[in-house]
Image 1 (cartoon, rainbow, N blue to C red):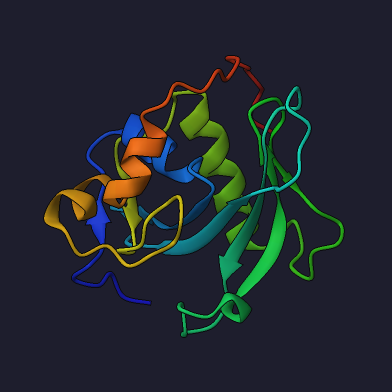
Image 2: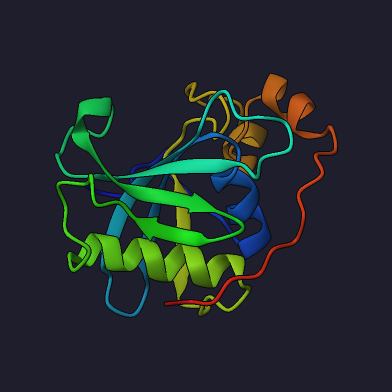
Length: 165
């Protein structure tokens, strides 16, 4: 997978967090020192009770066709309360590099301890609805104009802390 012209590198970790938690995010994590990268898809679990902490399904790109959902394999879940958890239902083992990168990246990003040489790129699609972004401001933010309006509404998310494992 190459970083395409529609890809956009987030310049700060707060923008990365907002994008990733929007509900339908496809993003690439890149280590600028080693040039290693993995593309992940995080989708918010539907039909949660209002009092529940949001839960996100985490998948990793395993084929070259990143436009098809079949190209991503489920590896685990993420919540603000527990961080990333590998799933025993995944066909990818917990010792796989992609799973280790997901755990490392998500847990450090949300504990505000991610090294500055790790970057997040979005792939030119809205992090909330998944539509192709065409407006320059939308490409910059990672959200289409309609989703930006919806994202502006305040959402109460308790500040949970978890330990990197």
